[in-house]
Image (cartoon, rainbow, N blue to C red; front, side, top):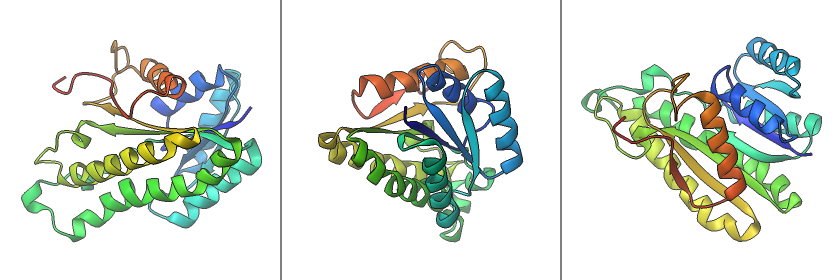
Length: 221
């Protein structure tokens, strides 16, 4: 079996997705900044019968990100599914009139340069397999910009455009690209935004391979 790589893996959505894909036989590469937390998360998943390993990287540092993805493919096997879902930093969410050009550097590195780096790294492996899936997970500002969260609104819109372009370009190669927009917070126990429910949704996007943009819940929720 091939590998799922989750960029921005944590104990909520990331762990739930690892469990869901793990039930289907996928090993999971957990990628985030803190190796200690990743190791603890992988150990917890192992106790549940899920094969996972942590690989530390910063999405704003291309060398560490490409290194982590390369190490993951070497250790676990070729990456068939890439999920890009890191949680943006609070300093990216300034009011629009307080946001300078310098303030946009971080969000753009996080939501544009990071995804481009990751996709470019895994794409040769997917082409070698003859199949692949790239899943972008974004908040509601990817679709409806918010004046109090200018950085993420601008950067998520650019990430969305990149994803749409990939979707249109790679479909003929058997590589499916989809975006899941999650309005508001991920809420344990919520009928549509509980981590396990969202993990099921992402598995369905991978399996059904139908369309680019999908919504976990209504935008005004």
